[in-house]
Image (cartoon, rainbow, N blue to C red; front, side, top):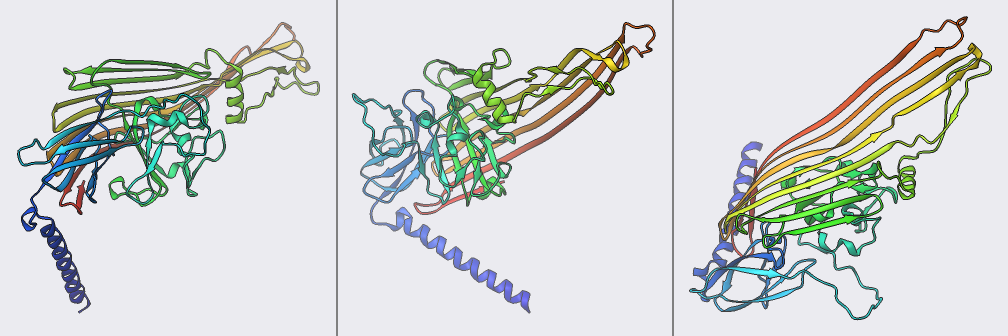
Length: 478
């Protein structure tokens, strides 16, 4: 009896929901309105490079109609009146634009809107208490959009860092000043989902947490969900950080070089396929394993808790062995590579292939010679210890986006991501004696150990978005 009542209640609920959707669709249907209406669709791009701009806001002035662009820059405003319309287009890091469009039955439906990057140009310097024009709240609770172009305005350590900038947001903090990990509303960094062009990145920092693993020059858009994130991201405890990589310039080649106290970086953007595609390559590497300056030494000691210690000698009975005092600070470097190829064979299709690789390598090898064991006579020893560690991420993704209709958009993604951590240690010592009366087993004694950890992540996604009417949007996926 209980199951029958529950089934009837479920059927009644589904029937009421269907009636509400049909009634709202009928009210927004052009045939049900006395005033003729029409959809306005188009694409928003960067006026300088030709790159598409995701998550831009497009609002029809004088009405409550509006939309935001998808990952490929497309938008559609459903059921707009047939007249001259003023579209207010805005995005963080770009100048706001009023685009006038003649929305008639004979006018072209798709429009291309170009936004000019926001440039600070002033004749004098004025100090005022004004918020940074870097991030803005989105339409969802807990969602924040970040402009990678404007991160240079924020306080930073040496270079622009995405995750250190995110720590300045409300509800987000770092464990210490020397950490780039995100602690969102009490959560820990391992409880955050971090995605780059659809691939999951498990290790998000360099230099023991001092720097994040993403080069800001290769990132176009940043979205952070501090709570209430959509179901398409799966289950996560703390937060979601969704990063979109730059596609590169469609119009002209771009080359950049950068250098600071710890690392050097290079960026190259090339147009391809007769300006219907682009290629981007970004490389960053630290050079502290070649040139160790004082700034690196202080950062390394603070990040690892390193202290200069007395290197122990070989055991020598009552009189002990001779110890050696020295600085055995290990050799260390990190690098990351971002690459992306994008091709737009038509106005409705976008194909892209992304690649990411980031790695930290630590060499804590030591070698000590002339260790004297006086308690056993004229015996000398040598100790050699080779200790190598490396960890990082390797991943790639392929994406095909298709605008089947002005109201219907699909996105197909295939991604593979790997996190690895390797450790090996090989230590040994050698004893020798110049006194024939003392018997010593000449030669070397060694001890070796290895450890390897790896996580492989293979992802296939299919996301669809359908604008039912001006007030309803349906998203499905698998």
